[in-house]
Image (tube, rainbow, N blue to C red; front, side):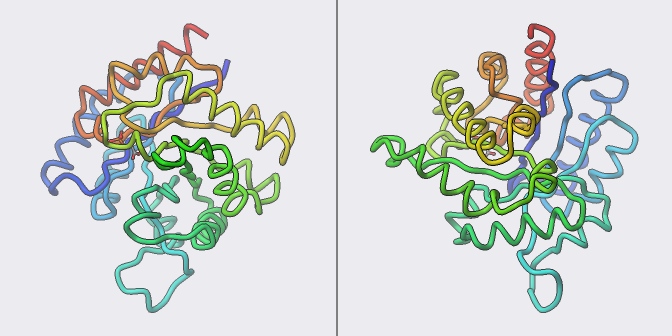
Length: 258
Ligand code: PGA
């Protein structure tokens, strides 16, 4: 039996006091429960310290949503992996499609980010996924393969062991259009096969591959029950404590049904 991971990506949402409320509620809800699921909360950078404080009294980890591709210095507005590490951040999302699209992040940038995170002992949550037209014209396997090969598969086996992959079809993000469990499973199995070819069977089995894209309290169990889906990266539904908790519970149910 393998455990699940449920990570919440708050994106650019919540004021200071709203963030405080949500973190407090999550901390309370997760405090005294024994979970098989690993919960990660990724708030905006401004609230990372607050999240770490809340997590210390509870049962979840804290992740950042982004990191600089450079080590340190004159990069106004950026936050380095070393800075995240010094604030006790243990995870960081890399290569989210919103960053690839709006901030023009390239595979080469992402490879540097992954390297700096690993150097600072932070687990990258590496996002990959195809756009709508790539799904429709049938090139999605190639797109995902090249994203992984260009930004992740340069790692040694030991380095790769410290990473998490999230499959996030761009057409499903924030659209309410979830991939069906069959569509998601097909890509997850494909990703695991690529990992197996590169790093071997054991690493492939041990790699966590999360699904992201309009995953919610209603569809989470069906997705998490699929063989190769090891949990979820949750956007919109992570902004409401009840919904996020329901998704965590779905992960628990999927583990116990396994
Ligand atoms: P969504 O976002 O759950 O709001 O679709 C997922 C993500 O972008 O990580």
